[in-house]
Image (cartoon, rainbow, N blue to C red; front, side, top):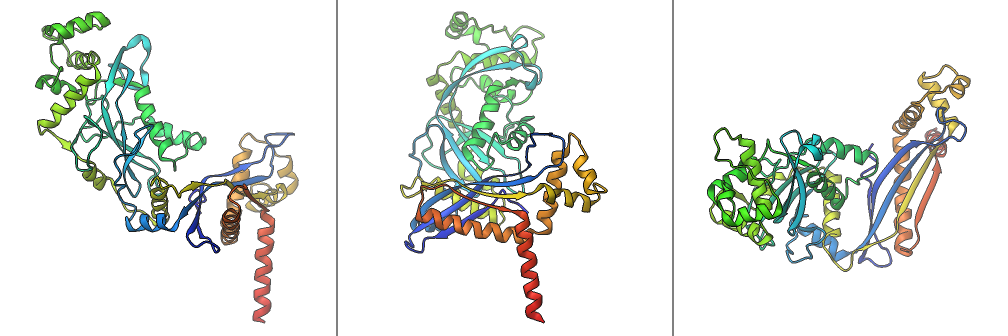
Amino acid sequence: MSLKTVKYFKQSDESPNSFISLDAWQSRLVRDSDPNSNKTVNSVTLKIFGNSYRFSYNDFTKAIQQKSDYLSDLTGPPMPIAIRAIKNNVYAIERPPFKTSVRLTPSRAARVSKEASTLCEIWIPWTVSILTMPTENNPSPSFKMFYNDGPLQSLDENIIVPWTPNFHHSGEICLGETVSNFTEAVNQNIVNPNSVTEVYHYLINDYFNGGWNLDLGGGVIYNICNYGIGKFTTNPLKDSDLAARAASAKVKIVDSKKPGTRDSTRVKNSYLTWSLMDLSEVLFAVSEYKKQNRTSYNVNSIIETEVGSLNEKESISSVMRSIYLSNSHTVNNSTDWYIVVSFSKELIVNTLVNQGVFTSIESAYNYQTAIIGSVCESAARQLIDENEQSLVSFIESSLESIATNILSNPNNSQKIEIDFSELIENKEDSTSNEKESVV
């Protein structure tokens, strides 16, 4: 049972043109803290937190008619991120040029230290990132990035593989340890995996704030220097203008024409040459590279290769994201909502005894361990599994009530609480009534 993908729609009875969507962004099942001891059995609470959105019938039908496909508007504001296209769970995100400082290192990027690396400040041109969001089938995001010489004019416009380090020739970023770090951030509720903005910023910041080792992607920029594109050159010291800039900025470029010069030194020279250029020169190099009909891509073709099949819940999520990102004036963030289910200490203890974890109720109350949290949460999960239909029915009725209340009064926060024992009792009462009716 997945509680993190709770979605609920309701059309207003009073105003049929008004819709409400409830979207659960976080679900927690945790042992409650005990002021007497943090190592003993205690109650458990299931909390489902969510946002609500109000939108019009026209927004909904537009998203359905577009099949959650591309957003055609390419004129929106570019900061902080501009989503230029969307299909299912794949997003094309454009970002204007920016300047960044990185460290070049011959070792692995994760081991970068100030003393063992070279500081390099560079202009990054216009970028188009292809972000594939996590889904139920694939919990890890994927990320590609491409260069452009200006804002996108069309989804069929050519964009090129970046010459930034740590990229594959397909434009896919080498995430390395970023995937495990992302998973940990999600588990600690630092990053909301359903938020395009949060996932994008986490991945892009992790990449640019780390170091760049030169064992992947360096061949691209070295070839650009070989081609002599723009100001890029294999021997910047022979270019009087670049040599003067290097001297002024105190950038140490090694004469790569000397016998025995390592390939890594030549690659590092290429990046240092990049750091000597201003933005207009970097954009000019991108433009010249695009004209040479070398390997290039476009947003339409990239997204088509990234899109996979979605299950029903993921399809609903895709439709809702399309509505949220449509910039329609009728879409409004509404109030937060909460569903809280309490599992009493007595219920958890009885469940653990029934599971054979403890031999008696007394031993359960007296037992202490540092992992008691996971033990109690495991008992609650079993109770949920054994009474799944009852819990699902309660959540559905709660969502119906919350949606109705928000449509009537969108300014009031909504919270529904229940003790899990009541769900079990209601289930038993319902079963008993069914037997009596049969007799």
